[in-house]
Image 1 (cartoon, rainbow, N blue to C red):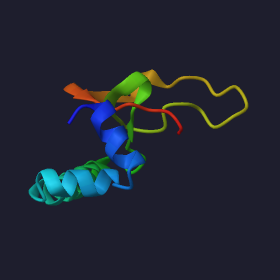
Image 2: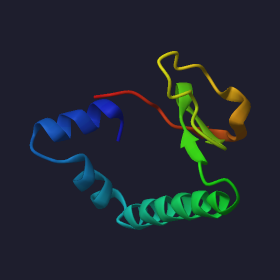
Image 3: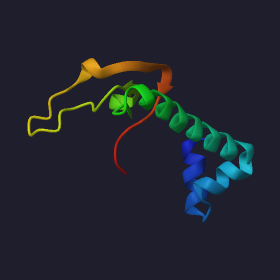
Length: 96
C-alpha cells in the first residue's frame, strides 16, 4: 500500500498497526526482535563505554561513545564521539 492508500484506510477506521498486521503478522515479530537486538548491542558496547548511546541526526543511525552535545548552556557538538554510522540505515527524526 502506498502512503495515500494507508491514509485512506486509516480515515475509514483502520489503524497503521492493523494494516501492517493484515499485510504480514511476521513483520511485527521481526520488528520486536530487531529492537531487542539494538538494545542488546548498545548494552554490549556499554560494558566498555558506559555512556554510549544511539543518535539519529538528520536521519542517520549512529553509535556515539557519549552524548552528541555537551550538557552545558552552550550545547556544543561532540561529533568526535561518533564511532559508527549505519551505511544504509536511515531513521527519520522529528516530532509529530
